[in-house]
Amino acid sequence: MYSIALGMELLVEVNDAQGMKRALGLSAKVIDVNDCNLQDLCVDMGTTSHITDMAVGHDIVLCALSDIESNNNVHRYVEYGVGAVLVGGALMRAADTSAFMKQLLVWPDDAPASTRRAPPLASRGAHRSGRWRLYAQRDVRP
Image 1 (cartoon, rainbow, N blue to C red):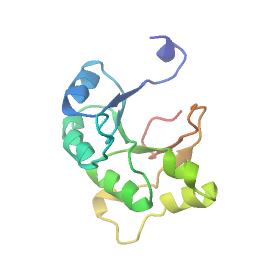
Image 2: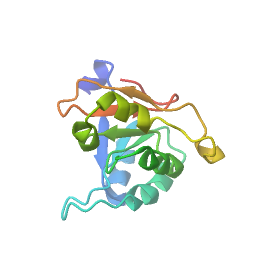
Image 3: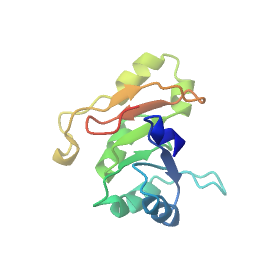
Image 4: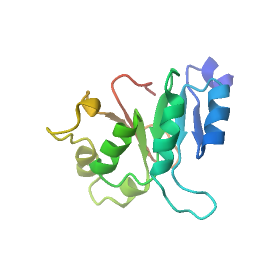
């Protein structure tokens, strides 16, 4: 693939188990789970929790992209097994984007042991929508 030849990894977006099966079949390394139902635009964070089990045993970075409004959302996604989140609308609405990003990266002292790892790193890449990408230490970098 052209992007891989340029040293870039593809981000494959899924929003259900069927899409996840297809993405795994493509040997995708970075899979983004969109919790927004594209038919009615309702967000259900449970979509990610159901799909993360399918990622077990695969060498992939699982990303979440829907409803990232606070560090509570980031913590929940990490508990599901997600290694990165894409932040869009909330960042665009934030009066102070730097303060918002810092707030997303706050990790409580009493966080479950399963989520205790180095806090995610933030990267504002050349994505047309202006989304910020948060990567855990072990994850693929832009």
